[in-house]
Image (cartoon, rainbow, N blue to C red; front, top):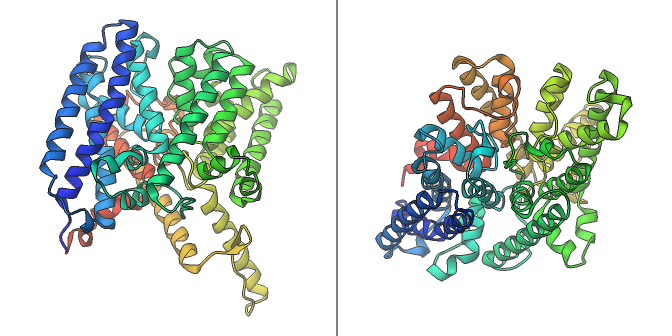
Length: 487
């Protein structure tokens, strides 16, 4: 069966029309502050809306009942690529980024919640541009496609294939029979959490503008900040604690948070992946703090509260793939660099805004490996892998192993590619892990996630890898196989 191109074109048109609303929100901020960035936003919104209307009209005769997994995967991949193209226009047309390569990387990094940047002085940028950066990450956290799925029925669209292709994790728990109901409730929870974090940050040393921006980029585990020094700008225990809690919540399963907000805490308490995720954070926060005390870093025993806070903050930021920083962790030594790379590999839970391998997959891999050791002494034993008390099927175990293999192969290939393009050993490995896991931070001269100095070829490659990682690898890489395009 041929790929339903008209369906894809129509859906992309719907998404561009909806995305114009977000671009107009940033336009409103630009006009409110009067920093001179209103014109490029209005022009960008006009171009995006026009392209959306034309695409929707071109695909109006699409047969939506003939849309399957291929259409879903292709639509989602094109959504992130096309949104990054149109989303970069305010940067480029306004002259804030002077070339397409850098503008595209900045935008892709935003929508994928990676947090890498090419901007050296964020504080010199207009309010509208900074708000647009945060808004991109906020959309990318929940997934622009999930937002669209929640609203797509008004365009007469079919939502299930898009939802399945975009949402992360090795299994989906639909707590409502219709996928549009699931998307609406997840979006509602996401909005509520963002408003709550905004209020808490606003009650501290941040003004409302900074509070809203950082609430959007912490709940989305994105990491974009309005300040050059990131969260370190405020040097506030209160701000650090609120951001840490927001990042932790962002790395948890949104469906379980939905139930918790309804007063049903049992699903959250009994979820094994969540327990291991929180334990993982506690262990590595403790190891980080112990290393800082041992090395006399970040004031050490002279100010134990400050040392514990900075150690825990950086560990949480890396594990949740947020990429915020409240200290220069690149000065913490080679041991911590290795620790940081490991934390960037596992990351948050499936069904969260985090990237990476995901704790659920790591849990299955660990349990299956332990069973293999047990079978060495009890070869006839039947040892199922159990998660939340239920046996995991061999099909899921197989897919988790394949995902992990491809995940590490992609990191290894990216590492070699970046080495060939001029990055140092530690810069190449950390940037590869960071891009695939959507973290943002790196090592060496790229520790703060600023990629402005690397080659254009590397920037385009990193932009592609960020999208691959955000869409759980197979969604994008499957498109490169000849068999995908055959009837």
